[in-house]
Length: 281
Image 1 (cartoon, rainbow, N blue to C red):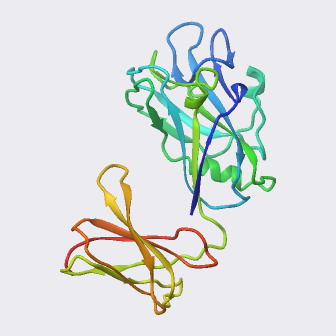
Image 2: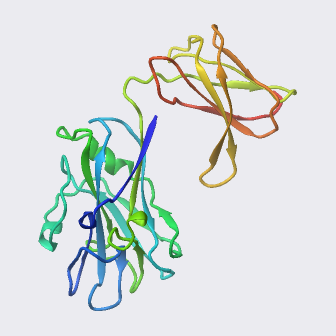
Image 3: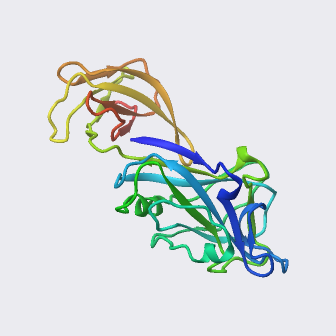
């Protein structure tokens, strides 16, 4: 697998569409939800992410929109959705009419029941890989193209009165502008089976295998510890090589949850993992 993070990098690459007066804004917050004042009402923001270096048709593993809170917000209930512009490469949005005329992806992801936001903190959307996949799968997509992501409630108008979340625009603070984080599979990679057993000496032994279940020797391997949390995080512990027959061992471990990843020359990316509790078997 490979991953990348792209951030809005121009003032006119994030805009906001809103009902009521001032229907289009290029300078204020990257916001979604409903504002109680007559000037704004329901809001959807669009962010343009450029130079997305993912080849056409690549399988997307996960994707997330990350927004930095511009202000403290605790109002409930905020009901928003995320989709994308269904186009080969996205251009800047220049007006309310131009915003409304952009074709949207069939894939849409709800971001509902958003909790309290504290100014300066980053907040992560649900997984929007279906949105990104639909764009990457377009026949005219090329690595290096741009993507427009829409987030808000202008179209559906489901949020409660004054229930909104305000993100930071590029105009306000470029370093805190919205980000798009994508993880994808790399074509031609070879999945390795990395199951392992554990014993009373707190060691991990296993065999690297190919897709057919045959031993595959001389593979680079890495051991990670699974840390508690939702979602969990992973700490790198050790690396090594399986031998010519595919056997490997890690020793001197504490009783924690681990997983192993492996790679082989000619398939230079991380592969599927198997994890287990470090307990006697």
